[in-house]
Length: 217
Image (cartoon, rainbow, N blue to C red; front, side, top):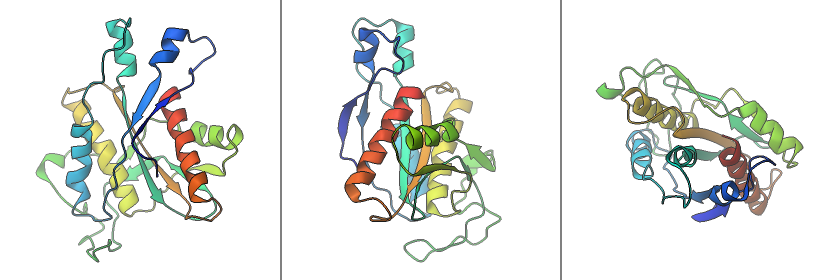
């Protein structure tokens, strides 16, 4: 919905100084993912590898300050129910049964759609580190969007993609490749175009959400 671009973000607090404000920016890289169970298990982890490169050094910042800013966000967007935008909170490893866009369906809801030996220790449920209730409330009250927190991501490719993204983060932390603070994953369901928002309005909603997440989390 957004083209690859760079946004300069507002200072996260009134007390932030000018140097902090200059450092607060986000590079947006967009990529469309297929609605296919057998493809996303390889594509989603690859996104985490490809887009984990460190950004350029921030002039005049200490090493500790660098760590604060070198953060990657994986914000997945999919079409959900009409009427409102929904910020998803959690995702499950199992429970998937509906056919994907190629008409392929998982063999059993009791097992993951795609099984890999390296993923045997993955938990059944993963929850985003983003405060989805607070984020939804901010987008609703401060920005005027029809938006709410969701605890049910639908048990389809949207939820499976969200799970795979959080699971990759989880594995990287467990393996010692990074700390809890280095990346965050989120999924938002937006309504179909015209119900009630135009495409341009949905683009503005996603931009407001990206700015809020990158500024506050």
